[in-house]
Length: 314
Image (cartoon, one colour):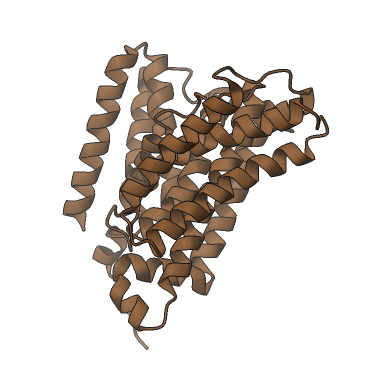
């Protein structure tokens, strides 16, 4: 069969705009700061974005189905606090602590998914409520104070290195690869896209939409707990107040990566590009000495512009 190359279809790939944005912003930051393209700074950027990048993996699954998860930052804080508490108060080997923190994330994901799928409640309301619940439970458990006194081995997850590569970067890459396989090489991934494209049609074609929704919110909770382990290792403490606003950064990474906020369109690789783009913006603006308050304004305008251009492009 003779198939001609359609340059227009190639240009409308979900990755084109994120990649173009990443290249343009990187060049601008490189011109503004001579140290930007140093290897140490590049690894520093990747290490800084690892937590948001991991959170954004779960958020991608949720947004691809047309949902939203506002609880990821608070669940991350609670998971890290529980993990630190279990380690400090009797499990210095860490096994129970790591499992406990992970179980918290998965548990909240199951609750969110069940309420959205079977309770037929709006995802934005459900996850807004569980965000408050998770934040409150973390403060109650810790008494409002950080839990410190963690053993040194936990720092490996946050600031350790394998060769010259930071461990958080390696973990982030592994998680993205697993997510790519799940979305692009399995029936589950096809079902995720079909729900976001047209949930009614997906259900009529035999897709078990409720179970798929339960699974994707559980994945979001799980990635929140993984991000919590990295953050706990970086701070060497469980911080009940950590993660404030992280849900917005995770959503921004997904949107900047070309995933449609309405669902059904997007690639996990785009989310990784979006997370790196956010990290480059943060790093470059800091290197240029831009006022932190003005940085929020600049990033907000860029996100709005990305959403507008993405809508018009499609």
